Each structure stands twice: as structure tokens, then as C-alpha cells.
Image 1 (cartoon, helix red, strand yellow):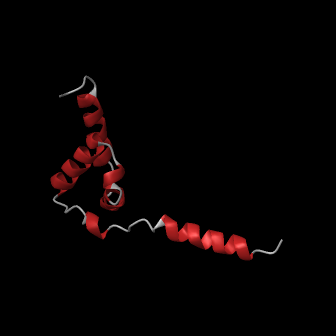
Image 2 (tube, helix red, strand yellow; image 1 turned 30 degrees about the vertical axis):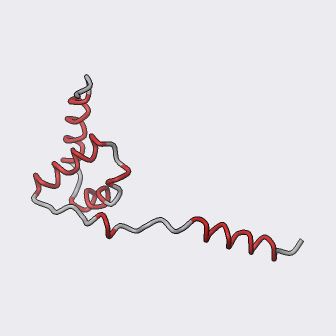
Length: 82
């Protein structure tokens, strides 16, 4: 279903991404899953237009396990001088 204004937003994103350098597009593509559907589509279209391959999303850095950070914080707090 197309929502009014979506086409306008798609056009704006397409024009914006056309001004980006290849490096800027690569940097943006590293956060592809954080982008809206419209932004993802426009970015993929710009990559295709330039004949560039999207970076492998599985190679993107993963977020560390926050439970390990929390455990380290508790250990640090327990051993901190008063």
C-alpha cells in the first residue's frame, strides 16, 4: 500500500543519495538495517545505478553482549574503594 507522500520521500532520498560519494554510500550501507524501508530501497537503487555491490551485512560488526558488560561493571563496583 502506498501512503500519500511516500513517493515524494522516495524521490528526496534518491536525489540525496545521488549526491553522496561511493565511500559515503558504503558507510551508510553499513547501517542498512537501521534505515527505514524507504531509505533502504533508495540506497539499494543508488548502489544498483552505480553498479556497486552492497556490503555483506553479515560482515557488519555485531553489538557486544551487554550481559558481559553488566557483569564487568558489577565486579568493578564491588572492588571499588569507598
